[in-house]
Amino acid sequence: MDTYQGMCKYCGEIKPIMAESQDAADERVSNECSCGGAKLEGIKARLMANINFISRENKDKALSQLTEEQVKMLKRAAIEIISDKLDKAIFNFGSSKVTIWSTGEKFKVKRTATREEIAEA
Figure (cartoon, rainbow, N blue to C red):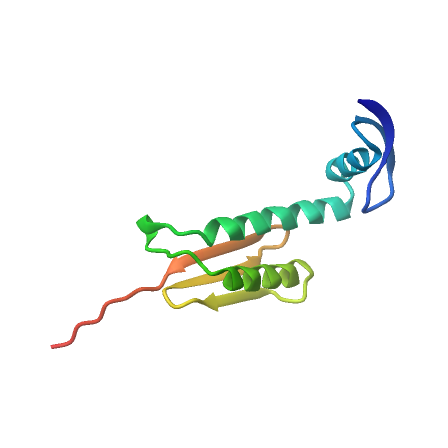
């Protein structure tokens, strides 16, 4: 490991840092930077991870696995919400509903089962 001058890819700040390579130093400085771009990228990464989490099958909550295309749609909508182009997105996927929205500084995603049973006499 050597000392490199790592540069934040969002704001250009340069810091000396121990790393395996220049690319690793740049990546680490970018991940640890407190600039707005780095914070926004961290929020985006967490929201994408949350979308992956809620898209999985959960038999206890009667939720089936979402398709790859459905997950891609959710992620595209999330990017639009993070970019302030949308306030809220709601998707109905047959047996479940997914809502993505902003609460100011935080971004949330919720999935609910929408199954119902009706009997008539």
